Length: 142
Image 1 (spheres, helix red, strand yellow):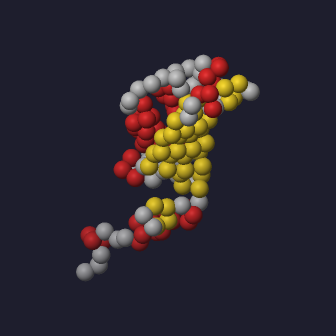
Image 2: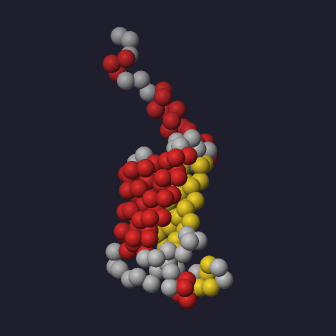
Image 3: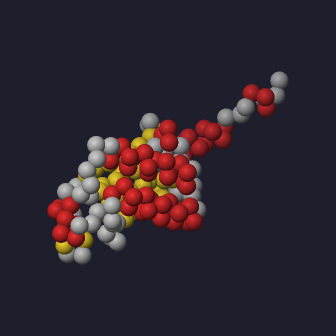
C-alpha cells in the first residue's frame, strides 16, 4: 500500500507520459518491493525544465531531465538490497522514459512505522493484527 509521489521534468512530450511513469513505478514496486498494485497510489507531477535547477543551472540550459520519487513503505517490510534494487531500477527506467538524466535525480524510500501509516481509516499495524487474529474455519474446534 505504498504512496508514491513523482515530480519530474523533461523536454520530451507524450500524451501518455504521466500514465507510463505511474504504471512503471507501480510495476517496479510490485516486482521488487512486493507491494500490491491494487492498493498502490501514485501521484505524478510535471515541472518546467526552466524551473528545475541542479548544479546552479536550469535543466532547460543543461538539456537534461530529472525526477524526484518519494515512496512510503512500512518499516521492516523490505531488505536493504530490495530498496537498493528498487532505487537502481527506478533510475534506469526513468532515464528510458524521460531521456538523459541529471545525476541529481532522486529516489527516497521512507520506512514508516506501521502504527503511524495506513489507508481506508486503518493503520497498517491494525491490519497486521487483524490478519494474525483471524483463524481459518478449518482450524476452529467443533
